[in-house]
Length: 399
Image (cartoon, rainbow, N blue to C red):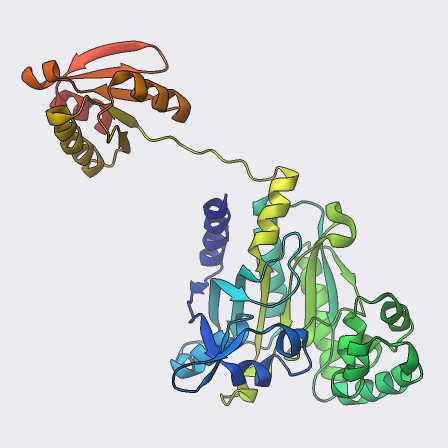
């Protein structure tokens, strides 16, 4: 199932013009402080950090985008034709409470598009997400959509939000109290019941956008409508990482109720510059693969047509085992799949294996077959058997 899902994701990625990138398992600790943000749960609570033998502070990667931006800058992707489109299938590490579909070591698929600020890039990225989830088998999908502004309009909104939140300071959870001055938008994303209730009446960011952000957001919505993608505006959607700006989104399936979010992403136009590179707009998303697979299994969405190997070779040890090894290699050299009795335990044990593994053909090599330069071929479905030589066997199945 894992391979089938990855095959679908890779195929659609290539169809949209994305190339695969692989980054190291560990990165510099400072990378995530500067990109993800000190007040995020990932940095403040969840990173696995350590000193290496050279005394450098390293971290097991908690997310993919920052590592890809680092690789993009170090490997001179800045000179490539824009947009640069990259995807990854990678493993990450976060010290959080394991629960159903969530692990401390986990895998994500993600895609990043660098070098295009147009709202059509946001819409195409969302289209990529919708196509992937649809091809995997999810139904009743829609986009939960918001804009969180830019450095021009967000400071004014931020001040409005802080003023509002301070009037409820006594009711906020401990984490949100720390966030008020450092990152008040994250309070809108808090899952504590009291904080959620306070967030309901908070100022709405889309009512406080600058003209450029408002035009960008309207264009994203228009392009989604052109693409026939159903969306719902969610003014409380902010995403969990500090580097996002303007468009943020989640893809939801109505089939899973309150737990229906399948992936999330958005635009992060200032991250490249923040990390020492040229001013480069970007948009991307990520999805947790363990959870996607769990949901597909629970809903029976991925059918597994596991093909058994073509042949099982039965033998009786000694010289018959040696001949079986030679024949197995020759069949594999001709793109046929083979298993064989490596212990030379004879016919009864081989028949048991063939039936359990649902293998369609069994080849029998005994001393008599070796003497006559022949072998027995048993058709397991039709319960028939024929005698033929190696050349005839290859001619029969190479077709």
